[in-house]
Each structure stands twice: as C-alpha cells, then as structure tokens.
Image (cartoon, rainbow, N blue to C red; front, side):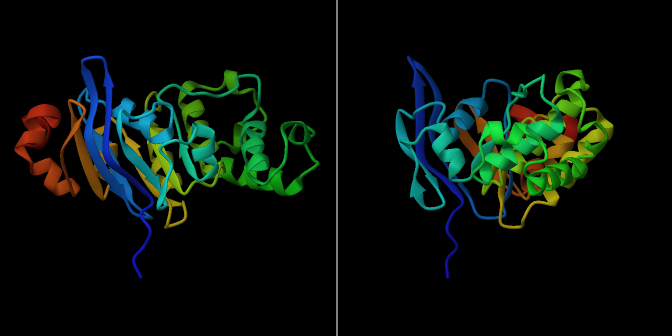
Length: 252
C-alpha cells in the first residue's frame, strides 16, 4: 500500500511585481521525513514557508497536505489539519509562563478554551502533558517563570516545544537554532528525534552542522527555484552547492 505524501508542492510560484520569489517549486515530504531546506540569503526560503503555511497565496501551483489540496485554506485551517510551524523571530507571550504557554496549546488541541486553561488545576491531564513536554526540552526548571524573563536561547527552545504541543503531522522549523547557545542546540535535535516516527519535519536553517546532523535529505533553493535535492553526502559533494552556498573551504 502506497503511503500518503505528508506535504507536497506542485509547481509553486509567487511573484512580487517583477520579482519571482518562488519559481515552479515542487517539493515532496513523506511521513517521517527529516528534510532540510537550505540556500543563501534571499533564496526565497521564507517566502516558500509562507506559501506552505498559507500566509501567502501562490501566483500558481498547489500545496497538498496528506493528499488534500489546502492551497485555498487559511493558516489556522492548515494548522488544525496538522501543519505547524515555528518562526525566525519568536511569537511567544512574554507575560505568560512556559507551563501556561504549552498548556494552552495542549488544551486547545484537546478542545478546551483559553479561560478554562487559565484556571490552572482544572485539567490535570493538560498540566501533566505540558510539564512532560517542557521536561523534554530541559525547561522544567523554569516552567513557572515569566517567558519574557527567560534568556533568548531558552525562549527559542520553548517555541519548538510549543509547536510540538500541537501534535503536528508536518512540522516546519524555521531557523530554530537562531540565538540558541551551542550547548542547547542538541536539545532541539533530541526533541525532534523523540517525535512519533511518522511526523514529517522540514528544517530551514543556516547552521550547516545542525542541518547535516539532522537531515536525511536536503533541498537547495537559489533565486526562488530548487537547484538540487539529495542526501547530505550528495549535497556536500555537489560543486554547484559549494559555489552558491556552502563554500569550498567548508566541504572541499
């Protein structure tokens, strides 16, 4: 039996006037994929993520989520279908605690409302799951502190924890290591490794060490178009990729 594709784009295009920010991008992620998207600054990576999540509408092409065409759906509708993202700049509420933040996501996923969750203790199952997620990210020691008082690196980890609390089928990690100290980056990889094996993950990241440790396949985006796709070894050995992004000194 053929597995349903977790996430697929078909001929995706987006223009801003004369600028072609996405040009005939066709990308496929199977369930359980560990896929990285790389490219130089201005390659169109953020535009592509915004097209995948519905923040932008394509000029042409389609976005398919688990076999269904979601091109016309809003971001929240795609999220309810299991397409969850993190952001380059965190979107957290600084006055909430990590436990409240993750608990709100868990409660919403289980059908609760914001006010019910704010009355902590009303849902022991929610508290227990939220605390377990925070422990995975080694955030259990700050779960009751105000988010705005946390170091930036730990806020980034909390954002990934928040995405995982939504129980995604497809998880888009948009530069999750940005601002995260080297000593804490392994926590991101460990948390992704602990996801159910059928969750597809697309990582957009400039940290090549993290990319090559995470990915089983890598797509290279240049000028809004896919240059190539392959295994980490194939991408590292490709002279075109070295020229436009990695650099001969890094992998030559």
